[in-house]
Length: 317
Ligand SMILES: [Fe+2]
Image (cartoon, rainbow, N blue to C red; front, top):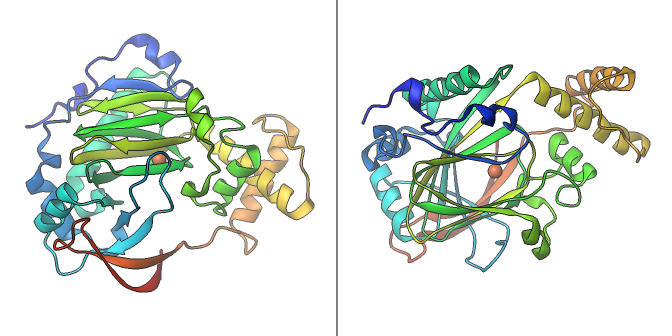
């Protein structure tokens, strides 16, 4: 079904503009029936996706926060076969650049951001991205934070989303700095069971999206059916300022052992940190390197969980 670019969000209220980015916000959208997320469209997209534009993950089923996820590969399978494995197995496929594979997803991304920008005074986004998540019944995503502004759009199925306050102790200042410096994997964040007492918990249904404050920790547990979701991420001038100051603080903490570091994004100390962030990021001092992934399974329709162990190898991207 075609969608109208001007009405992707169907329950917008003007006062939402006042809490955008500072409070978790659950909204209704019209994309649950979009042809872009049908089995046929997703199968075709998987068929067209190059190795550098997907991840397939597996983690053992456990209650609560799951163990570290494993990285795999898709080989000699059609997109339709992969979808069948997701439907019946225990895997999680993330297409990281669908807009590069098919411009229709880029057009969707532009439409939904222009809708938000039309409704939220002063909201100007750039460096946007859309990724598609296709995941098995009951799969969990470990407690983590993301670096850019982030939303989760539920298209098919239902998932439980736990959103935690974007502040210590849920995310400490040094952990945020490491995340931004690329020294802490998004999924290596310290988690305590009692954090759940302070989470906002949503059963996100098909046709709903969730936007939460910058760097807000979250974890996800699918209900018992195939889930199709997508994430959108973006930057704004304001988000970049936070990035720069926390980047600089991370460098100062590492190199000089400083521990009391202000997070304000104005004034003289902010400006010198902005200069430092710029100087470090584009020099050989830059601690952010390519990520190395260790692949140790292949998607396999003949096994109950949909995976088969293979000799481990690494790839960088
Ligand atoms: Fe996330």
